[in-house]
Image (cartoon, rainbow, N blue to C red):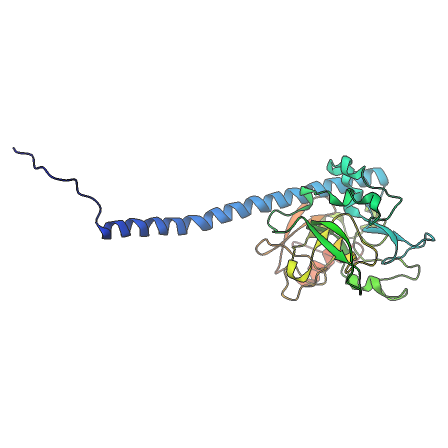
Length: 305
């Protein structure tokens, strides 16, 4: 039998287009799965960050007998002064030695305000465990003076804030006697972290497994909603909100304020509870239940959440 000879047959244009279409469909199906896998990994890393923070808070508690203050601020005479007080060091700085960042903490001069030149190198540190990998952000932002808009200093960005409670942190700028500012000048929230706070385990009468310690907050650059970890900058714009958060609105609420908890995770945000566990709280949680979780002595009975 005679073998036919001739040039090899190639793809026709239609066949080529079909192959390209099939590849495009496969890629379209694959990309969402890849993105979901990446987000799952980022969410797990975020959870691990909060677990590490929870462990550090309890190690601090074991040594000091209390959880660290939300932020420390006193006037030149040593009296509490929430917004104008010196130092301003926050809870996340206080636990650095228990976060395996003792070398960073050693750069901090506790006898001087955060804005003093002696603490300039300290403010340049980046702490990966204080950042949610799902949150796109720059490394630093500049905080300006309330009213004048003059730049005070640059601060490293973070995503985790201490729970002030259910009160809005704007109230800390009120005159003494206007809640939540007490007559002695202390700005006291009903959560675990507030101005010059010294909360003990015994003070969390609502139960450690149903009380928030810390939670997430996403960055919104266009609104200058940047969170930081070193502490409160005296006279800075929205200074308290940079380190503490309020449960005024449920996570990711459409009417959320800067001091609320939020995240870039779909459906809610992650929180570290008083027992050191980490829970993902749905943005659809009942507001009453959510606010009950934010207080330490509300007396509420919280079931499953």
